[in-house]
Amino acid sequence: MDSKKDGIGSQKSQVMTRRDLLRGMAMTAGALAVGAAAGISPIGFAEAGKCPGMTPKATLHYQDHPNGAEHCAVCTNFISPGCCKVVAGPVVPAGYCLAFSPKVA
Image (cartoon, rainbow, N blue to C red; front, side):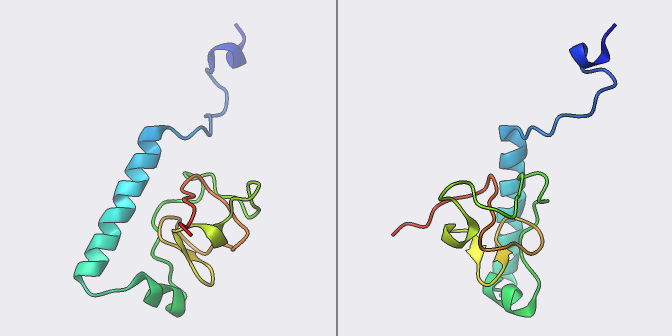
């Protein structure tokens, strides 16, 4: 029996489900709410070198290059110079992930 045909023994797929995305966004929103209640600003984290995002990069398929015209620097979640409200750890302005949400002009 071919293990690739039925998925047994093959590597786990890196496909992110809508449930994973919503769970990550809910966790991030909760963390931001707790931070806001404690009087902690996400901007303060960026200045201190600690980014507020809690969702792992792999979960959101983060990449350090843009997806066409979509990139971190024009996303509502981006905190200059290199943080994100959603993605855990540092990000680059030219990066991209599934949490991308364009800034409203």
